[in-house]
Length: 118
Image (cartoon, rainbow, N blue to C red; front, top):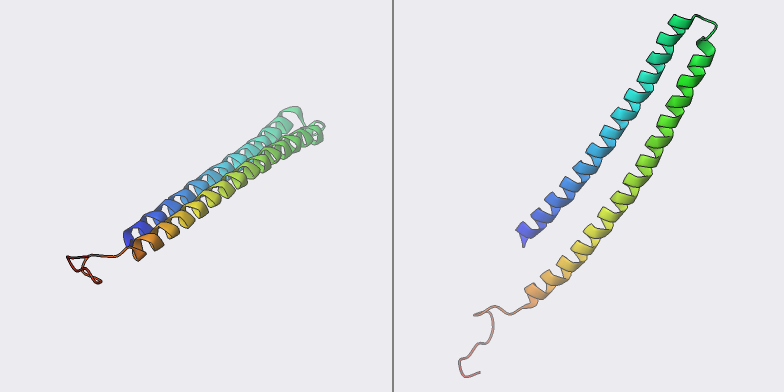
């Protein structure tokens, strides 16, 4: 029974690590997109001069805000996935707890009155 709990613990840990990896990857992509947009705006501002800089910076900021909006949507989806994983884990724990209590209550040979005539 101890091994079963260890397996459940490992499965929950693996699911949490997967969710963490997805979140970290999403954050990395969002940061890369934002930095790329800022760098592109700076490069265009140097090409087109200081007169175009405010418009290009506004464009870069709009792209950065759009990237953050997409990132926010991704986090909402991941939150729903995490809630589902927690619900499934809770159901597994509830089922296994009931099963283990039934197994513990099952009589073992030699532990009680087991006369051959009975």
